[in-house]
Amino acid sequence: MKLTHRRSVVESYTRAGVPEDKLNALAVLLLVGATGLVAGIFVRPIGLAAGVGVVVYFLAAIIAHVRARDTRRLASPLALEVLPIAALVLRAMTLETPRDNQQPSMKSPTRMCFE
Image (cartoon, rainbow, N blue to C red):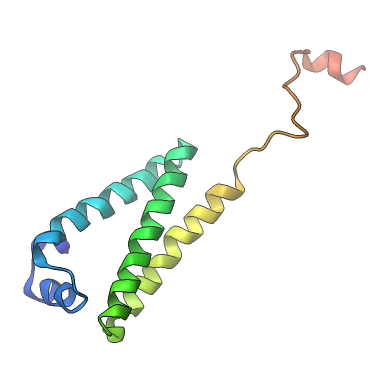
């Protein structure tokens, strides 16, 4: 929607204090974040970085709406903030952590069973 520069979109962003000439940059940031979230399914660090970036993006949107006293349109960024937070939490929960700083064993699985 930002890339279309439709009048209603431009007016909404203007009310939040965002000039029209920044809409393309914001759209690119959001597209990069979304792409990173999808890529993060396969490459965890990319997903985490993208999740943090998208959370920051929508947090900035919420702050912009509050500062501009445009609370009537606050529901959209608040609702959209929940999705990247959920994605970030789920990705963080699936990270593997080393157990007691142990190095992986080079023993074969059959030898480990009989020790």
